[in-house]
Each structure stands twice: as C-alpha cells, then as structure tokens.
Length: 68
Image (cartoon, rainbow, N blue to C red; front, side, top):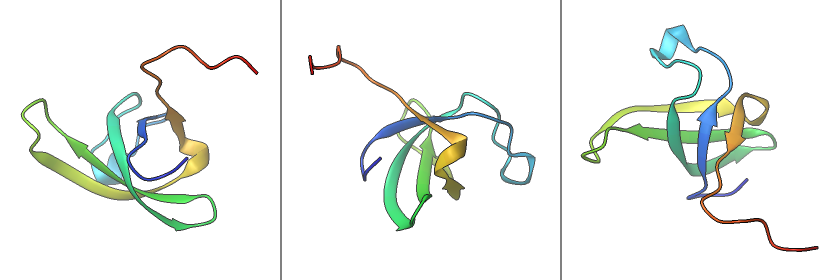
C-alpha cells in the first residue's frame, strides 16, 4: 500500500472511535507495515487521522484488476 490508496478497516478501533469497514485514505507510510490513515466524511471533513497497522487495512479498488 502507498500514499493516497483508499483503504477500509478490518476490525473495530474503539480508542479511535472507528468501526470495522470505515473507509480512509493513506496519507503517509510511517514504517514497515504501519500507515497514517485519514478518515473523512462525504463532505471531505476529516474526523480522524490515525496510525494503523497494514494487517488491519484492506485496499479498496475502483477498477478491475490488470491481467497478469
């Protein structure tokens, strides 16, 4: 995963008030396997910016996968 990828959480993060399936955008790669993710509402207003391990994120795709 890389900056500007759209991702969803795979489990609840109660300390951050985020639930499984919330959609965010990676804004920075912090270290191997750790990402800073911004969560915003439909008006683009950010409501959370949290460091999240990659194993708790699922990349979302808006186009078909390219053939290998």
